[in-house]
Length: 114
Length: 113
Image 1 (spheres, rainbow over the protein chains, first blue to last red):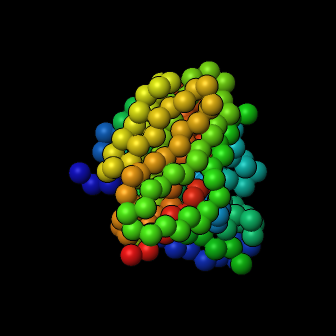
Image 2: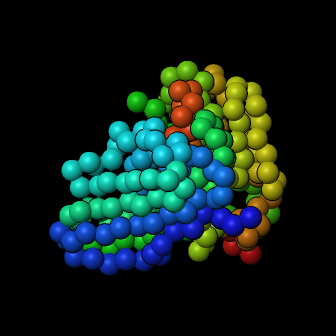
Image 3: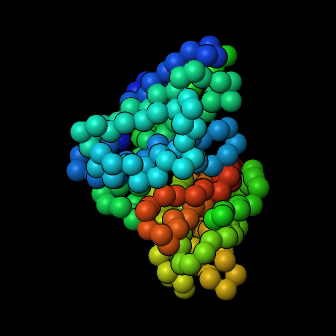
């Protein structure tokens, strides 16, 4: 079975520019997560979807970050405008169901903001 | 709020040595506990998990026991191999059951031949 796909793998932008990341979860997985992993730290949840509805976006900086999963399948995460502190790896994960299920992670998108 | 604390790395061991990576947590209720591993150049993957107190998770020779009395979930392996070199993350999923993972900061393990 195909894993979680993410693109692009790497992105370099200047501060105040915008950027978008794409994620395609494992087929049939209802729950999709976006995590931010800053160098030397563990991943931190930004937003969680169940199908096309938001379950948790309490740690999403909503003044600059947005995310959508319109058809309940793939998802995009956008940053506009980017700040230097947004430099991180953005991980997408999916699980079959809501709850303490195994999460399957994509390879991540490494973002550098200059 | 809920949190996870791991021992700081890097941990450097010789092949066939015994491994312990300490993990303690703070959470209300009864969280589920996980160890995820990130091998060089690869994505995060589940290593093992335990969903209730006294459960033991095991996989690939690694073990961890959910200890509610000490709020711990230490990772152990009796004999490490060079191929075990990776970053190990302890994580919890709160008892509210949304599945959200809260991760520790990660521990880098380097095994030398």
